[in-house]
Length: 240
Image (cartoon, rainbow, N blue to C red; front, side, top):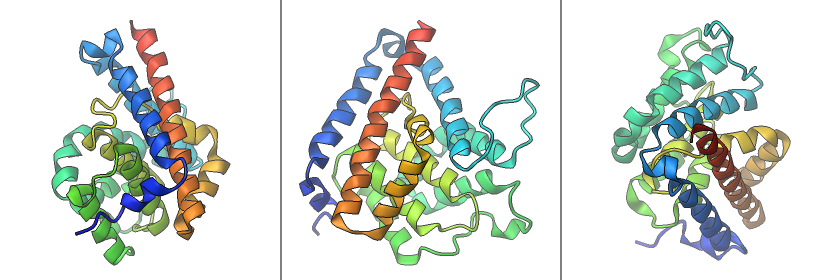
């Protein structure tokens, strides 16, 4: 069976951008602080990713001094961040189940009907195809698959709420699962947050499905992976 994502590597600049992104993230893993485990970097990266993801949705990303998070979007993003590592085996084996759990965590304070939590209302066959890609139906590099997972979930909007937070969390899981960022040290979410208009424009282009729109999204994501590696380096430098 042919690899459905392999043609993406023929789009101008995509293969090179993916290689550059992977090299940048690998370099962070080789820093002395991260060779010793990287737990401190990963913990700080997780919180920054959650705050940025909530910020993209329009929430205030600042953590209250007393630790009591009132904003429902930020609270959901933080719950997701706390659970991502434990969801990794499920993501590798049963992505649809993992997506349902992500939505329960992200949207718990956003829906009036609890029965709506974890239940996709759209996406159908494309969601199933995405699950197949995650579980081994493609061999494209990690940056490309991560960008596709991210873009598809933004485009499909499978849930009634919190689709952005879910999409970025699924992308983060994919970064780890593909070996792009095995210790979850990088923070591309910060790059997306700093360029929200461009992020939304690129995501819309991907959803349109044209070769140029898909290419622009893939390149934009690879830029964010490199920026996320720089964010991780700053965290590592501060911790060492």
